[in-house]
Length: 422
Image 1 (cartoon, helix red, strand yellow):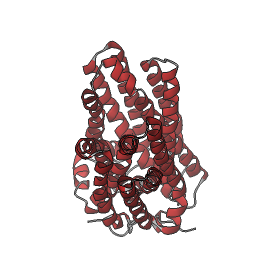
Image 2 (tube, one colour):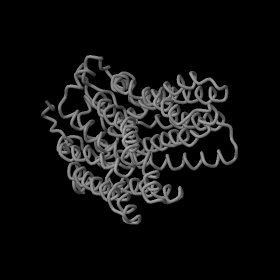
Image 3 (tube, one colour):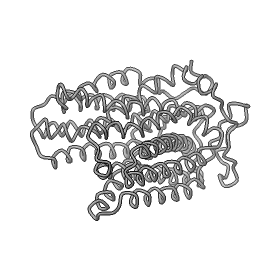
Image 4 (tube, rainbow, N blue to C red):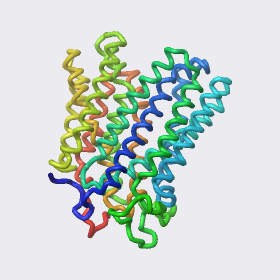
């Protein structure tokens, strides 16, 4: 077996690293459950507030803004208190924010709903960056490219959360009771899991030694030397980090656009009913999850950059086929290729941003911010375009960022330990 991780980062996996890998996987799963739980009850939010489609769009954008405001600071926070404490702290903030939002829906306090969603978005954003940072550390300790499997766990969590949400809605469960219960359980699971995390202290600021890969996490101190705002701003000037961000941007935009618009594009584009549209989305999600589960072996065998290029080409072909072919079953086959192509860009971008553990927290925050900007904003822009050209034709615009991601995929090549990027 070969691995695309830098040679100096390859170590024999310890039992602690294996336990940490399972702990990170579970944290990804519950993060997916939490996100899908909220999404599954959005119709109840609309009905509770009596909002129009436009008002709901603005409301949901509030949570996205919270994430985008917080994400640039995630690296500085994780470097000061460690990934484990960051996950717990901001999972708690996410739970509190969504609790406020759902209780405010019951009381018909629209402004308080926005406050809750903003806080929840902040919590989700920084929690996500911290768990990706820990995932990259565990990946390096294991010596295998396991980040795609963590993201597959997130995908599985979204499926489970959506299923639980459907059952809760059908049973008439109250919005606050359902959402708060799930968020509290998520938080308790995160608290239990971070006890097994590997230490992720950044050693850049004071030249302190990096954590010993063979050390027992139970005795390790998971606190960093603490990066500053100046360090954060400097990271935004690193050419390689920004190029890796473009790779992640392309992947996030292709994934986010599919989540939001594939079902509608199938229904409107082929004149089918809603059930066929739901099948189209299910095909995309299943293809993406399966590709992430298979990704570890493929990346270890063929390398990070090769797989990014293969996936980018697959996403490009899949989008074009879906948008242009006149036959439904061929278009759905294109959706499957599109889903597989969208699977690895985000996790591989997180791995590339973490090649140098001294700067991993800051670089993950930059790459996450760039990627989630596309994930949150891009689908909305495609929706505006769809009003003029239709959903299928509007999705063709994805070919542009995917092509850019293909062109800059080489930036994700593992770092030489002796050199820093420009």
